[in-house]
Amino acid sequence: MAYKKHLLKKMKARWQIYLLLLLPVLYLVIFCYVPMFGQIIAFKDYNISDGIWGSKWVGLANFRTFFESYQFEQVLRNTLVLSIYGFLAGFPIPIALALILNALPGRRFKKLVQGTAFIPYFISTVVMVGLVLKILNNRSGLYGAVLMALTGRTPMDLFSKGSLFKHIYVWSGVWQSMGYNTVVYTAALAGVDESLHDAARIDRANRFQRLLHVDWPAIKPTVVIMMILSLGHIMSVGLDKALLMQNNINLAHSEIISTYVYKIGLASGLGNFSLSTAISIFNAVINLIMLFLANTISKKVTENSIF
Image (tube, rainbow, N blue to C red; front, side, top):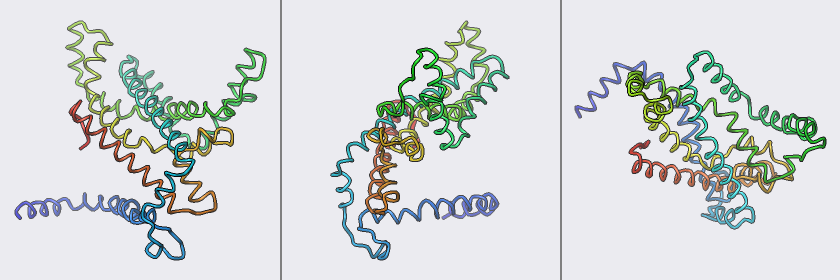
């Protein structure tokens, strides 16, 4: 009781801060938590005229429909390939870039490199995909012009070979986001005590040894936390980029869960909201399992975790 009175007294003394907190809390409740009640349509044969509560209850029928679908294996495989490939390629590069930038002696050059790497993040997905399609065009793009000049013949159309989709998708994403993703690690490196580097210099440690024994231990907890959060979104492959890069030729390699949900729920004209919601829940459950698994392993191995 005394603790509650003390807490209320502190809240009353700092009421301005809690007032500022009110808007983001309301936003989360209205737009994140309230819509969760709509997830119940995954267990119903949802009909707009009957509404959410009036629609017939079908239990796990929508989940079974997805699991028994001939496209289940394909969309699951494509999603896993893109997500795991994207994680393995995209996660270590910002860390390496942050460590390299921190080691650079010239402040102006460091800022120039960081700013140049940061700019692609502000390019919209639509524009970025347009750039990729234009640059990799086998006739009018940079890729086509260079190879034509070297070989004297028109090179292969990269977008006509479905197996290349994952490479174009992942590495264009790495290029776009690596500068932004270095911010967290750069901030962590900024907190390294310079006296540690001075002590290492006295012990005649070279720059690589200082990076290994001073810089890396300083950002290791941050790296672990970011890795856990990334694994918690392992199945959340973006809809817009995959859909924009998709065509009839690479469909077998580019059809992922998010594009499949979009087509079933909206684009096909069938409006099967129950099935699309069931697939989304399946996707979210896999992400949740990966988050808890990564957090548990990290807690046991590195003693760093988010909960």
